[in-house]
Image (cartoon, rainbow, N blue to C red):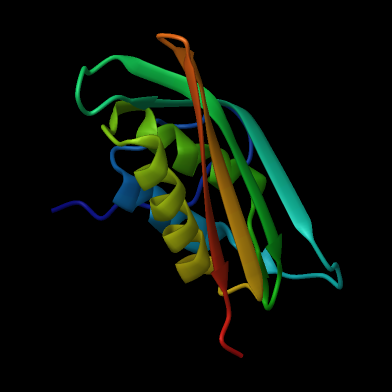
Length: 136
């Protein structure tokens, strides 16, 4: 078995993630020491996943807000991570919970909030929010 290097290229085209697990490894390896900031907000306006029931694409946004503890999320690795969901069948609510759990595992922030907004399909827009807090 060939061991993959999960570090993302510093320039040029980004490789497509083979799985969410691979993208998680990139998040872990690309996280960097947190500078003295109180809050970080990332807003991905081009998020795509797949409806697990119909197989149709769902388009939307992901907003991540967190209070760093020791680490910060590198934006290119976050983009790579979100890209991994393009072929992943999941409901909006499940995506919010999964992304919150994954980012909380990687960053161990003081506070984390993930909002997944699914654009209207069939006239229905959906928004799910997941919050995680450190016990410390």
